[in-house]
Structure formats: structure tokens, C-alpha cells
Length: 170
Image 1 (cartoon, one colour):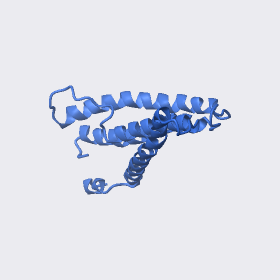
Image 2 (cartoon, one colour):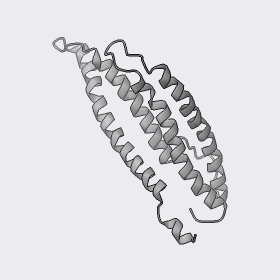
Image 3 (tube, one colour):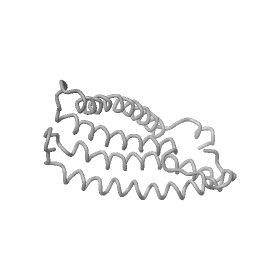
Image 4 (tube, helix red, strand yellow):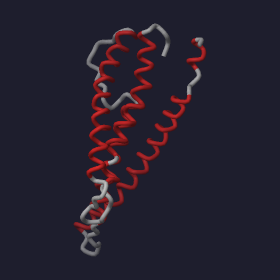
């Protein structure tokens, strides 16, 4: 395999890029939808002619959890969420080594989210929320999806860092 073949994005990178684009769209839509129940809750407190709907609290909670998790996934993909620049400017190889160490830490967290998130979701599989009778697994499944997505994106980034450390271009 020649170095020129590395310039062509593979299936993994294409799927990863499409998934990232999909998540960005879903993130924007969920934020826009989140505005509705929160606004209704705020105005219902101060306007006596607006009813106090029960579903707005649970809808806001569901959308808030998913918005946070999707935002964290996008943040890992864009290397903006868990990275802190505290080292001086280094050359490519030391930077790649530091990024690999940071990605290993994020990977451990991602694995915990995936592993424990599956148990968390199984715990909520047959439970319903009290107010709107929403299946709770819809909220809980955000944790293992976040962990799996982080591992997907971290694998792609770690591959690039390993290529830099081995002397090949990323």
C-alpha cells in the first residue's frame, strides 16, 4: 500500500464523517425543539391563561439529556470537548504522543459510558416516567450511544496520531 492510498478517505472515515454531519443536524434540531417546552414552562408561570402542561417538564429533560450527549459526541469528534491546551507548542510527534495519552483517558471514560450505560439502559427497559409515561430507556440509551460514538471517533483520531508517531503523514 502506498502513501497515496492513505489520502483517499476509506469507508470508516466516510461513515464517521456522515455520522458527524447527522449528529450536528440532530443537535441543532434538538436545541430548536428544546426551546418550545422550556418557553412554555416559563410563560405558564407568569401568564395565568396558559395551562401548566405536565409533558413540558419531561420533554425538556429528555431533550436536554440528548442535547448534552450529542454535544459531547460532536465535541470529541472535533477534538474540542475534552482537550485542554496546557503544553507549549511542540513538534508533531510529541503532540501526537500527548494526544494519544489524552485519547486513552477519554477512551477509558467512553468504555465506562458504554459498559455501564448498557446496564443503565437495561435497568430502565421496562420502566415508564411518572408524568408522561414515557419509556425511560429512551433517555438512558443516550449514555451507551455516547460511549460507542466516542470510541468510534477516538479510534479514527488515534489512528492518525499513531501514523504521525510512525513517521507517516496523518
